[in-house]
Amino acid sequence: MKPFKIGFEKDKRKERQYFYLSYLPILLVLTGIIFYACIPSQRFKINQHPSKLSYSPVSFVPPKPERIVLSNGMIIYLMEDHEVPLVTIHSLIRTGGIYEPADKVGLAQITGEVMRSGGTKTLDPDELNKKLEFMGMIIETGIGMESGSATLSVLKKDLDEALGIFSEVLRSPAFYPEKVELAKMKIIESIRRQNDDPLKIASREFKRKVYQGDPRGRVKTIEGVKSITRQDLIEFHRTAFVPNNILMGIAGDFDKEQMLDIISKIFGNWEKSIKYLDKKVSKNELDTPARNAAQYLIGFYGYHQFINENNSP
Image (cartoon, rainbow, N blue to C red):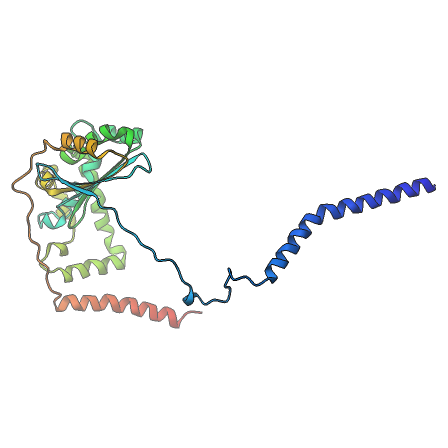
């Protein structure tokens, strides 16, 4: 039995050796971490107050785009950026809700929406949507209270075709009747629901008081929206969307000279309008009712906060 016992003890010693050797690297790492943490280092100022920290000065110089004015008055800003093969165009149009008739409030908003959703003279709404999806590009249009906008985002390889479609959306939207009616229905439904939200009621009345006698103080009505026709959209678009009323910024992966040549070919034959929007909108001082409305709104939120603070658990 002794030979067996000696062999068994040797196996046990080997197992202990393997055990110690397997954990030796971990022990060495832990020992090094503890040793390093105990040594004072000038690189780490753990007890330094945040107010005493110092940083290198940050400087930023925004790039300056090149400004070009076409013969028809359209202003172009060009900025090359070759980091990714993408081109983005953003246009600002001198238009807005302040130029719409008083009895047709919402005309500008509907025009801006249906310019994109209502197709063009060569592409109906469904064809336009499919074309944009297939090419993976984005075209968006909209008109706010004091300006309109149109945006294009497309890969560099599809730029020529995309600019042609973008030009059609800007210059010759079709305003398909069913899309006009759909846009009107959405606004009418929002008007019907506007009294469901107390904050919307307060904001609406606040705007009325602040901008008394000013286009900015008008509110949409169901009767006014219903009276808007497709011909109203066509006339509003024809008045505002002219080249000497548009500022276009272009940034992305393109060559400046080639881009200018393409833009000149696509938009250069767009005739400028002599009778473009030049309406002066007054900036009224706040009258007494307006100040009362402002006090009501500010007081409302202060009171709400007071209740929460004094009744919190």
